[in-house]
Image (cartoon, rainbow, N blue to C red):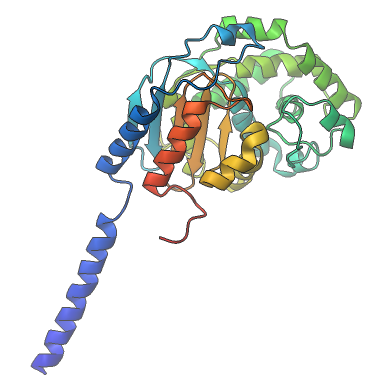
Length: 338
C-alpha cells in the first residue's frame, strides 16, 4: 500500500513538473518578446535596401529613416522598440478595416458575391484584371475591390460615410486618428487611375453609388496618419477575435474575422503575398506609406513602419523584422510541430 501511494505521489509530481516545463516554455514571455523585438530592430536598422514610394509625391518626402516596431498580445500587453511616435499614412492597410466594417454591416456574402475574394495575379491597380472577368474576380485588397468596398459603406452623404469609417478606425486603434492633409491633397491630385478604375467597376455594376465619391473617400481613408503602435493595436484587435485587447471594445464581429484574415493571407502583400505566406504563415497587409501589419491569431498583432519599399511595394525592413520576430515567438499558425 505504501508503495502504491508513493507511486501515485510520484506520478502527480511528474504531471506537475511537465506542466511547469510546458508553461515556462511559452515563447510569449515579456523577456522573450522584448529580446525578439530588440534583436530584429538592431539586425535591420542598418539595412539600406528599397526606396520610398514616389508615384504619390507626398510619400517621396517622408523621412526614410523612420523605423519602429510594436507588438501587442491578445491580453493587452504592449511591447515597442524604435520610433513609435512618427506617423505615416496608412495607405492600403486601411483596406482591411473598411472590409471588416462592410462585412459587419452587410455580411460576408456582400463581398464574396460582388467583387470576389480571389488574388488577381495582376498588379494592385490593374485595369486588365478588371476587364478579364468584368470586375467579378477581384478582392478587397486591390484598388478596384477596395474602392468598391468603400462604396458599400452605408450612408446618404459623404460626411456620413466618412464619419463611420473614421469612427471604426479609431476604435481599432484605440485612439483618435487624423487624416494627413498633405498626403490626401497629393493623392487626390494624382489619383486619375483610381478614378478610371472606379468608373469601370461602376460600368460593370459593382459600384452602385457615385464612383467619384467612393474614390475620394477611399483616397481619404488611405491618408489617415498612424504610428507603429496604432497599427499593432489594429492588428491585435483582429488577433483577438475583433476585440481591442486594451480598450476591451468589440470593434468587429468575431465571426467575420476568419474571412478578413483569409483575404489578408491570400492578397495582403501585393504580388508577393504568396511568398510572404510561404515564409511566415501570417495574414498580413502592407501599405506604400511604409507600414506592415501581421496577425498571429489568438496570440498577437505586430506592426513595423519603415518607408523604403521593395519592387512589389512592401517595406523591406518590416518584412524582415516581422518574419524574424514571429519565428522567434512561434507566431506561424501553420506550425504544428511544437
